[in-house]
Figure (cartoon, helix red, strand yellow):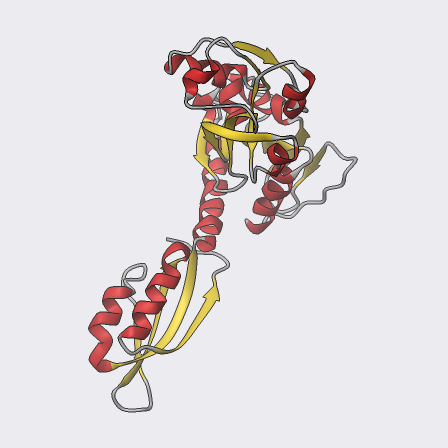
Length: 283
């Protein structure tokens, strides 16, 4: 059995549990249980503080973990990362009071900066030749400038609304983060095989989220151009229609390319374009 550690509450926890369920793994979770066992896959889920997860995995208390890259790198265990998961994306940024002048990173030379990520920030400042006084605090970092503790802060930013609400503005991106799957380095052969199975499922779910299934009708005269626009996984499926001179085309497109490709398809004569979500996608 694999033991998987995830954050016990918050958005990262919700997204992690959703991914596991989308992988076809069934389990029961509740706000008061700190562990649960899957009913149809050899997996036990541990609900822990995010800061503790890298250490638990490194020490072998948990076999796997889902955690933010920011937490993983700050803890000093980047070598545990197996793959990125594409959700819970955020950035670690420097911010200063809106009324304060700021021209470049050198503006922070000799200043006091409050942060929960002294290791990541310290390396960033060193790389840019800036020496500053770092004050390590946990939680409510945004309040530091208004109470006179620091002239700037370095904290996790998603939308930026929390900074705005505390009279701060973002001036530098220090580190970009997303959720990652991590694994302890000494998995047994059986555990490594289970990890490979879990990754296979996760990748199928993620691939499906990035893709759309598209069906359309096109004149045969435009088929070569339609095939160029819709390469699909190998090639599109083409079926003759009852109406002479027309075909039905089925393919897969990437979410990021969809609108651009759709406009091009219409320009070459495609009609009746239908777009469907994909639940799982096995490459």
